[in-house]
Length: 322
Ligand SMILES: Nc1ncnc2c1ncn2[C@@H]1O[C@H](COP(=O)(O)OP(=O)(O)OP(=O)(O)O)[C@@H](O)[C@H]1O
Ligand SMILES: [Mg+2]
Image 1 (cartoon, rainbow, N blue to C red):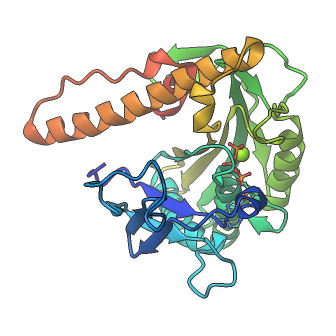
Image 2 (tube, protein in one colour; image 1 turned 180 degrees about the vertical axis):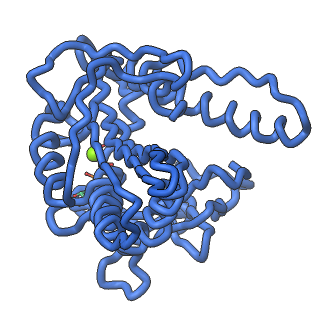
């Protein structure tokens, strides 16, 4: 993105059983922050799709390329490495009072939920960040400083917002705009948590209620976007003046729906509607990020008028503003 406020990293997961059964080859390699993709037909002279004049290997540069292809490889990028590079930084910003947001984007089975939430003991960046947040809070020795942590967890499915911390609330929560604070989700539960164990319990319960519908492609694939938000309030009491000050910051973790859902062929009825809505939100996502990048370039040049289409999809109206 070329902007110091936005980082883009990529992670390569191991081949899954379906790919292994199909005899798939490894096409990705990574060195430092670079990712290389080898043309699939490069070693197959008989391949009818082979076209001359096309590079055999394409290279892409990201802020970081995480190599998680083989767990037995000494270079395997672990969950802890991702957390150390990204989660730590979010916490630093949160304690300074800044809002941060992380998205996982990719097609179904790419490893979005694995990197964000993790499976079982293989905890992802969300739980690792929450755990360290409480470690830092518990290490606070400043008697004038107290902390409050609240969490919210929503699912956006077919442009409808659902409260995962209050599944009884089946309705479609409304996204509204506060004149001073910007967009917010009306009636959203924000639960106070006092420990990482509290958060773990909430995550476990709410993950069970996430909308997952069986599809031909991946039985357990996420067809909705999920947004988990940590709201950290730091309260400082000045004993001399007897004044209280507050610093509030937000960390949002977003596990997006599989990107290929957007243009699945042969889908009809509900699946088609899902595809259309996922497409709408992911296209808006692309447009919003592109305009933000343009905005930051223009700002450096002294121009400010760039339209950022947050409102084109309910997700980004809520999210990126934060
Ligand atoms: N970095 C990794 N290392 C090891 N295994 C991984 C890694 N990333 C993903 N996997 C495995 O790949 C499978 C698919 O990953 P995951 O469920 O995270 O995909 P997803 O992108 O969330 O898909 P969907 O869009 O369908 O929700 C899981 O079994 C997961 O354990
Ligand atoms: Mg998933």
